[in-house]
Structures are given as C-alpha cells and as structure tokens.
Length: 117
Image (cartoon, rainbow, N blue to C red; front, side):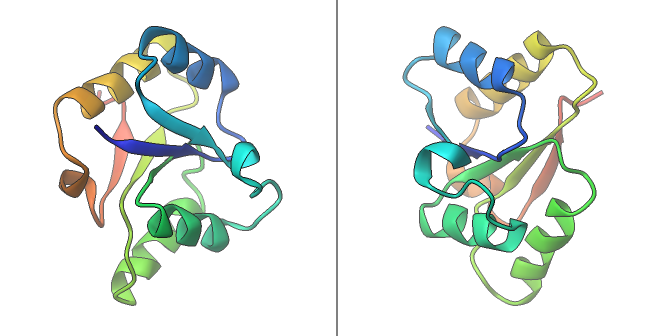
C-alpha cells in the first residue's frame, strides 16, 4: 500500500472521495500534519522523511523541486501530479489504480502525471 500526502491546494473532493471509496488508503493532508503554509521544498522533505508520495496539482514548481532532491541525492518517494481539469472520478480511479497495482519503491525518484491520457 502506498503512503500518500496531499498538498495544501489539492482538490478536497478527491481526498474525500478516496477516503470514501478506499478507506484503508493511507492518505494525509498537509493541513493535518501541521505543514499548511510551508514551501514546496519543506513539504517534499517531510514527505521524504515519512516515505509518502506527494499528490499535487502543481505542474509549475513541485516537479522541479522534486527532481532537485533527486539530483542532490536526497530521498524522494515520488510525486503524482494530478491534472486539475480531469473529472474527480478519473483522478480517484488513477490514484486507486496506482495504489493497487504498485509498490512504494516503484515511484521512488519519479514524477508521474495522472491520469494517463
């Protein structure tokens, strides 16, 4: 099972839907762990320390910071960039599929754009 962290601006409908249809999913929000208002590098560092894949809609800055961690030899459990224009149901299905069909190490040092088109 994947361990996930949703960033501050991640669509709450997706988070609620995941908790509703996949209750055992290990997903926490940045707001729940005291990281609201923190910058991207701090959130990625926390995610790495907790071995959690970050869920985000941020295509602009998160991928660059994530790959900077990889280049620096720092741990980076992975990032799922979820298209903010896709239907909520498609986003939920893509995250559930990734959770059910993979292991955490499959995403290490990767930035994945979901859902696949």
